Structure formats: structure tokens, C-alpha cells
Length: 65
Image (tube, rainbow, N blue to C red; front, side, top):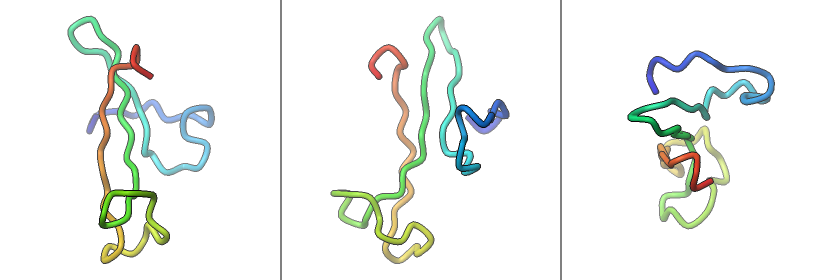
């Protein structure tokens, strides 16, 4: 994920670099960075405020999307 550089207008329309994919052991994986509230119950009201926000890296098999 750290080496992913395939950001395009199609997969990164907001320029946040918060979503990508990679292939490993014959499987395609998606990764996404979300900005959750501190209770991890919903999205953060202010993602720029680290006191109110947890950044969460989510990883999933593309076939499960």
C-alpha cells in the first residue's frame, strides 16, 4: 500500500490518496482510509481534528466488495 502510486481522476477524484488496490497471492485487495469518530460509530464531523477523529485503514478482498 505504501508504494501505491496509481492514483487517477477515476479512483481519486478528491485528491485524498485514500483508496487503492494491489494484487497479492493471486488475489486483488482494496484498501481505504476512513475518518471515524472516536467511538468508531460514524464518520468524523471534522476529519482534520485529531482530537475527534480516528484514521482507520480498511483492507478487503476485492471479491467481497
